[in-house]
Image (spheres, one colour):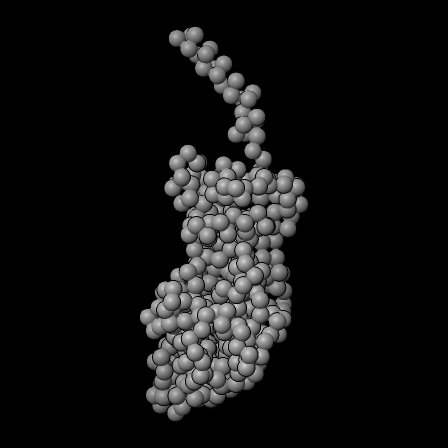
Length: 424
C-alpha cells in the first residue's frame, strides 16, 4: 500500500513538471472566451456561422451566443473539452487549414495584455469596469439597472444584478433613444452617456421599431386612436394616432411618445378616442418624422411599414413571399406592394438598376434605400436589404432565421457594405 502511495505521488510530481510543456502551457491569450472582442473572435464567429453553429452575424464580440455555439461544436466533436472556450485544440478542429496561432500580444476589448489577464473567463461576473455585456452579473450590473430604471428604460420591478434579456432590452431602448448603434451591449460610450446629464429619458420616435412600439400601438388601438394592425414600426399612421391621442389628452402635440405621453397613455384616467385613429389608410398616411425618412416621402413609410409586417417570416432560397423569402425576394415583395414597378431580380440585379441613384457612402444613407453587400470571400453582390435609418436594416437572411432587423454599424455587414440604391 505504501509503495502505491509513493508511486501516486511520483506520478503527480511528473505531471506537475511536464504539464507546462503541454496543456498547462496554453496561455490566456491563446484562448478565446466570453468577454473578448477582437479580429480573432470575429474569425472564429465567421467559421461558426459558416458551419451553422452560430445563428447570429459575426460581431467580433465573444458573448453568450458565441459561447453556446462553441459548446455545441465541442459537444459534436469528441475529444474536445466542452467548456465554451475556444482554445488551440477547439480552434484547430473548427478552422482546419485556416487555423493560425494567436499572437500573444493581441489586444482584448481594447485593453493591453496586462489588463486582459484580469478579464473574467465566464459570464458570471462583469466583463470590465468600462463595458458590460449580456451574461454579466454583479454590483456593476445592479448600478446599470438602477440608472436605466431612473431613465425609465428598465421596467422589471426589482434590481437583480444579472444582465439578462430584460436588461438587454432596456439597453437596446436606451441606445435607440440616444441615437447609438443598437447592440444590446453597454460599452464604454453608452455607459459614459448613461451616467451623464445629457442622457434622454426613454422615448419612442417616428422611425423606431421594436416590441415596445407594437405594445404602444396595441394600447392606442385599445383606446380607440389606432385603427390598424400593430406592426412594431413607428410609421406615419402611428404618428397620426399619437398626435390625436396627445391632442385629446391635453399633451404637447409632437407625435413623439416621451415621458409625459407614456405616463398618460398607460394611466387609468386616460381619455379614450372615438374608435379610429385616422380616416386615412396606413398606405396613404403622411410621412413620419426625421428619424424615419430624411426625404419626407410617404412612399418610404409605406414600404417600411409593409416590410415590418413580414418580420418573423422564414428564409427560403428563391422565395418571394408571402410566407417565406430570400433576400431579393423580400425586397421584391416590399417594392411590389408599395407600388414600385420592378421585375423580380437577384440582389446583384437590384444593385445594377440604372434608373435608381447609387449611394456609395454609408453616412449618406436614407431610410428606404436598398443596401447591398458582398461576402468576406467575394467582391460580388450577394445580399440586399432595406435601410431603416439609425444604422439598421430590415432583410431576410439564414443567419437571422428569416425577416428581421439587423445592425449595419459593426461586424459582418459594416465590413461588407458595397453601396445602396435610392428608389424614392
